[in-house]
Image (cartoon, rainbow, N blue to C red; front, side, top):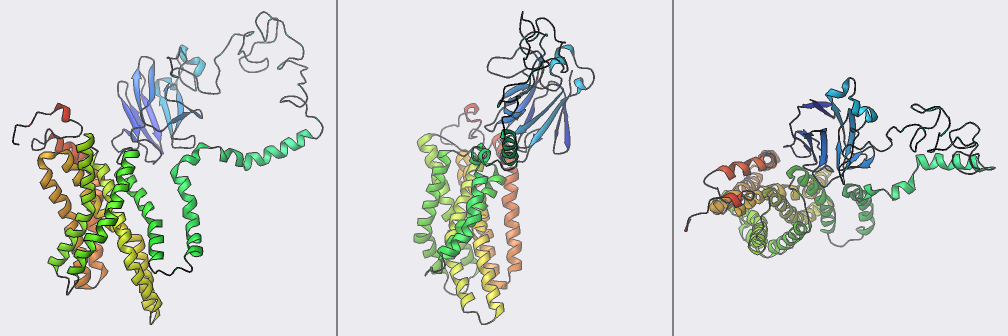
Length: 499
């Protein structure tokens, strides 16, 4: 029996035969690799008759010996890279093979066990760069003078043939001029060395053909480095005070969305999810200008009491939750499809970022005016800090609240029996926090109390990112919700009529 040891990031895990070992980005795996390029369930290691076997389970690739491999056996020692050849590296060891290798494994001590490979897999195949031992005098035999090679003699180099003078690997071989292994023609060697030197250290051609450019994070880095300079050129003569707010709001919002995606881990995002996000953005952009701002303007007259702040909270949080709910219900009605509540939590953050982006364009105009008409340096500083707060935090703040309501929208759609209470709770939590934030800023005229409210909001949001899957499992097992699980609906007991 062979104990498997997996080492990653300085930590070693041990597993006994018969155990199924899951590796991936999700915290539910046995070996967690927290890298955004790694799949949630990247691969599994299982014990078979031939030993431990690696099997890819996610969409991201696995690289073994620098080559993509979906399935292979684990020998004495193997190092695999996840997602790309330069990705996170795992070291796999089989404890049985630390001593004397088994006879069937002598041909591939450093790689997978030798043996016939299964169709369309590389189970038992040696890693790239290794060749199975061959008898002297047959194709694949090592050249004389190298470890494991037989001394030159009759029949060496080819079956039934005698040694040929001038063949590679034999004394006296000079090679072909101008070809690898042969003498260089006049002036060629120096040119080759110079070209190799620069191509090795500055491999531009290799960079241009590298598939790593397809990774979004690398592509995103280019516009984020260039946009501030482009803004200086394009907005230098802008006539609208809201233009800088829009520009930098659009600059920051995608960064927050990437952070939310990484925290929530909603699963695969395909074309359907992209279309839903676009629809939510359009809905929020229209609704906020027609309904939300109109209601808030009517409440802005006089002092902002807590009841007024509560109405504002429910007004704005409903504006963000409504398109998420409509999208979820239409998807269920028209396509009979339910998404994970974490996906709707991410869609809630999309609605919140859109809402905050539109709102901050109004407040940043006021901040720029304050800077321009500042009577002293203190007023100018306040205006600059207000601008930065609105650009960097306004959308984030709304997204945190809307993410909480989005999670409850997903739960309400997937568990119809408690749909109304779930929706009311999901909108009330962020609405009350929102109201407290606005009211305390007005009453206490200080940001410190609002910072406490923001901290509480973050605790709610981060808590749901950590426990969303656990809550869904517990709800699924609760008799009050049973029969409406996205995952277990086919096994549920039918509800009695009128329930």
